[in-house]
Amino acid sequence: MQETLAKSLVHSLRAAGIDFMTYLPETRLSQIIPLLQNDSHFQLAPVGSEAEGVSIAAGAALGGKVVASYMEGTGVYVACYNILTVGVRYGVPMLLLVSYVGSLEDHRNSFLYVQRGIKLIPQLEALDVQYHVIRDGEGLERKVKNAVRMMNALKQPVALLFTEDFTL
Picture 1: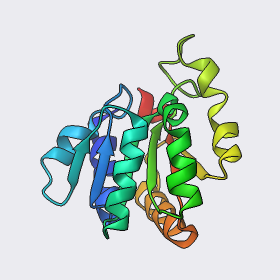
Picture 2 (picture 1 turned 120 degrees about the vertical axis):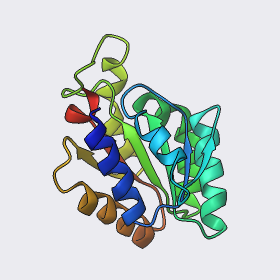
Picture 3 (picture 1 turned 60 degrees about the vertical axis):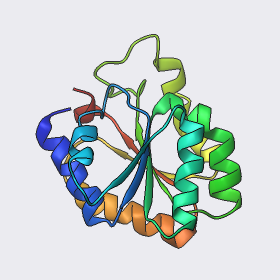
Picture 4 (picture 1 turned 60 degrees about the horizontal axis):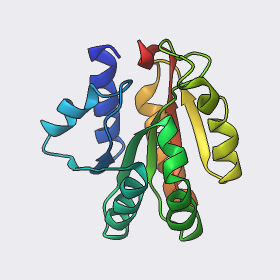
């Protein structure tokens, strides 16, 4: 991902009110991590698994934080039970920042990701998680704000899936 996109994404998260984030580093969006670490607005919690990240983010949300959980698309499979039980069933708003590995527009797509990538959207739909695919930086701040507004209105997780320009 280009540095300008990484900066724009971090700015958009801040503008949308996100103040707490769990993360498990991956390859597509990882340029945001040092930017987040150097911004005192964000409280960060590195995690060992995506399921752990969703649960910790849910606890922070219940404590009054506006939260996001950043993971690779394959991590949605790992966190599926936690997303469903903690996020959807108990009504905990959180933004899922997901690098959409294996998507048609993933510039680094390979046999490692494609089988999971083509099943990511059906999986989110089965979990009843609203999502939006983001391909470039156009209107990024508005899209992130819309997702945060939706997660708060629904009182459950909403996913942003980053592909195309975010995978360069």
